[in-house]
Image (cartoon, rainbow, N blue to C red; front, side):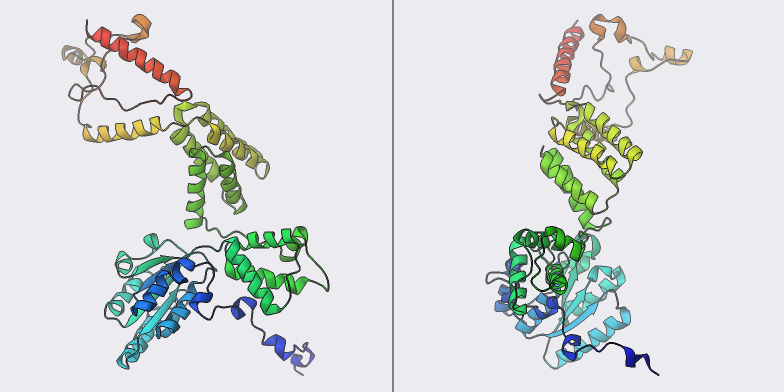
Length: 438
């Protein structure tokens, strides 16, 4: 006997019920929220449609920002046939079939908009296969990617397509989506005002996610029940932040952290540090980046910065998570509030360039050791003055190769500890001038 006889009967209207995000898909470009710079009355795509001429495009943006929906609506409003493939599930054979269908369609006088989801997943050869059909007008390519096109797509493909950036939804556009959902469901979300704000934050700029979360709330709520923030968290658990440690999310956040430290904003620096912890970033990677910030942006303006960052990294290694995270947070705040100087960083780059240009020049003979009689006869170490035997422990000799003459790479600012270093350098420059005139 079939087990189907004992399976619970699901009402047909429930079985046919589509997800909320699918039911709320915009029917026109003007209904798209969060991408007004593209789909608004003065947006790029609206202007293209009005001109009657569409070119190939790459839609670049985070998940849930409407890339697929906009491509479909664009084809409809421009009167184009719509074909959709995914680079995850398609190969060369699939591309050939799509291209052939587009050619036949073009012979009948209709052009094809080919939407390729996750286009960055195609390899270089597969990406090259689009070039002929783009050039002869067989297809108008619209590729969607969450990754930076500059790194993931062929230069030849990029030269034939315009990159349009889709933005993460802000709270305003996410709230608009929630209001549309409430109108469709004909009931308000059973959330306190604070919990509603938390739900928007959980969505992390993803329109599809905010509707999915709302649907989960409606499913979980009993008659008359209203969830506060704690209840919301318990019901929907927690959505992991959108963050790929190997791709843009990783580099965007570490860049934001570094620039916040450099900009002496400890609050912003802590925020980005916390986001990276929250997203599962390797804390020892963060420790190494803090050490880099100490030597690049603080330098000798506060020599303790490097010491503290190394100590924080070691403390995390000793304590582990979560206790050790506080040590890294302390180092982060120290760096952000320390006096800033890139003088050593700049000096080292200049010295490196000089070394490349003058790498064949020998140091002056008077500072070279003379371990053999031949080298002594050649004048090695002749005239060298031992600085500790000189007044003020300073001889004022020149140490650069003679053909280069004296160079200045390090220029300490009048900030922090480097103010004292500048005073010493100025004093030694004065002594050097006096003693070399004798």
